[in-house]
Amino acid sequence: MMVLRQSVSMAALVTVLGCAGPPGTEEVFEREVSSDTSEQIIDSLILAAEASERTGDWGGAAQYWGNLLGKDPTNQVYALGLGNALRRLAQYDESVQVLRDALPYNPDDPELLAAYGKSLLAAGYQPDAVVELQKAAILAPSDWSVQSALGVAYGMVGQLGLADQHYRQALI
Image (cartoon, rainbow, N blue to C red; front, top):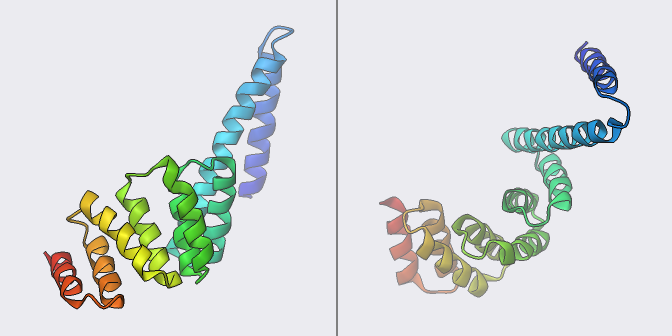
């Protein structure tokens, strides 16, 4: 029923827009409808990706975020979504690559640096993870998840005193 209602609404919109302007303005209306439709598609993909994340459908989330990132490779939200979904799917190297590719566009974003560091950690690149998580911790010192991940990274490279320090910082 909902699909039928949406189809009827779209048909009515196209009919109204097609009849609304003087001759020669059809291209302007098509561009406006196309732009509106494109924005609606993007909004729908974002909602679908977020719904997939909420239900633990990481494969679906990765697909939606990947489609969005393909349309706008510089968008940090899309890169974070895809990188996190890939990490949840245990596709660690792919997650690292997606997030690494996003860093030049947002080099000082603590959330992106933290996600990149966590993916490096999951992929087994502990020394590199320490470096990226240190950067994130400097930019977001009160973020418990960054401090905790940095504690894990330090523990994995054998720096237990620093690991303990960051675990404690995460609890503050």
